[in-house]
Length: 86
Image 1: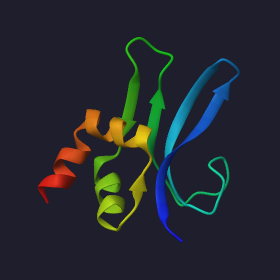
Image 2: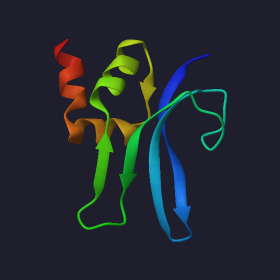
Image 3: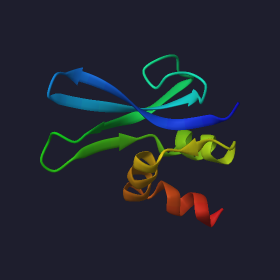
Image 4: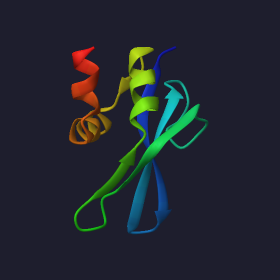
C-alpha cells in the first residue's frame, strides 16, 4: 500500500479547518494516521497554514504522494520547490 499526505477535516459545522496528515492509502481520511505535519484554516482572511517543512520533506523523499490540495499548499509554503531541488 502507498502512503499519502492528505487533509483531515476538524472543527465545527460550517467552520472547518484541516490538519495535514500522513496515512496509508487504505485507511479513511478521517481514520488512522501515521504523523501530523501541520494545519490549514481556509475560514480566516487570509487563509492560514503552518507546515513542518522538515517532516514534509522527509515523507516526500520516502515516497509519500500528496493529494492535489496538499500539493498546492506545499507549493505555497515553498516545500515543493525545496523537494524538486534535491
